[in-house]
Image (cartoon, rainbow, N blue to C red; front, top):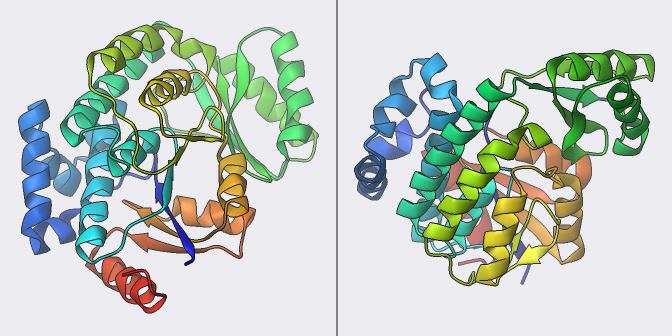
Length: 316
């Protein structure tokens, strides 16, 4: 049987209106949003469906809102008789992936990513920073650029190794801007500042790491029922202790997404389902391994198409 991977998006995929169509169409999704509101005290249904956009974009709101939408889509996919053999999530999405694998309870995951977002926002206030997408240079080509900017003074690192010629850098504002200019001089097609509240996946998140580590130690983590490829290592984890450790590590370490996707392909993955808002991960897979077919499930039409196609391939 063709191996199927579940792909879970991260922060930046949020958009006002996400999840409304499946919420209105499926009682089981409404129950999930109610559970999230009960767990956090926040009406994520209203925030996700109505905004305002500026409020939804806040790190502490975007992260749980995306996780809820992703888990809702997963629930519907499973009700359609389809499930994955493994999973991977981009940054925040790694928590969604562990909900899918059964290693984190939904309520614990929603509360934890809400706190994660708050801690990351506070770290951004304490140590101001930013992020930028560099397009057209490989990680190997970009590394000396980042090193030169770092030597000029300031913190800047490669934070998201997304695709062969797409890397996101993160760090102090002046150092990131210096690296952007050096990247353009080195032949980058584009260098674009991202709208974020801090320098995620960089040493500037150290203050958030302590609080998140304590939160992860306080919740139940169990062995996963299928492998989840960890951002920090680009290798699968299933044991509870290793899951807890890799979730702690990922806040400060780069998201090794390209390497993670190549590992899945080498493991026999030929199809994947992106669960939640947007199609960012489908686009990255197209750049990494175009032979892998990725279905996007974020609304009833996407759900129907994915279930029909995968059922036809013998996945039910």
